[in-house]
Amino acid sequence: IQAVIDANIFPVLIEILQKAEFRTRKEAAWAITNATSGGTPEQIRYLVSLGCIKPLCDLLTVMDSKIVQVALNGLENILRLGEQEGKRSGSGVNPYCGLIEEAYGLDKIEFLQSHENQEIYQKAFDLIEHYFGVEDDDSSLAPQVDETQQQFIFQQPEAPM
Image 1 (tube, rainbow, N blue to C red):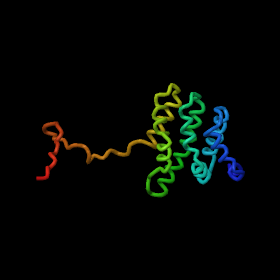
Image 2: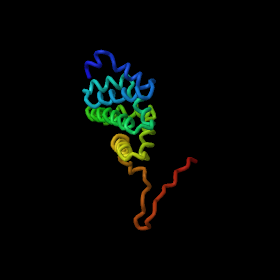
Image 3: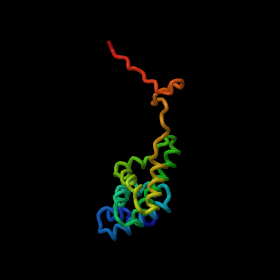
Image 4: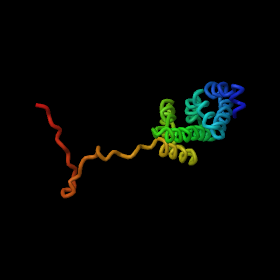
């Protein structure tokens, strides 16, 4: 992977992933996803800095189920690194979730939860649940409950006089 980086081939591969004819885009998707799978954290960050997220997200809407899976796998590898970075920094924030959302990737992944291919459906479900799931609900936002009456207690807002 480092030899491909040193030869400055990834910028060309990402351009192919964005603009080329579909069969060529498929091959570029395999190369990028393989790099996210076997690459070091620095190499994966480099691919993200080149803009690999949006074209991978764009592939989530193609009819070729295998390429959708390849794109999902690449995104999962990137999200896994982001999760590690969030834990290491102490923020707990995955920096790549926002990039995927900006590329409309989350919308596309959510849509894939209704895909006819069971593996794609399951991968989409798992990605959303693991990386985009709602944090613990804030119980302070829920209305209080009167246990004796078994009903909610709503506070009247105080109106300024």
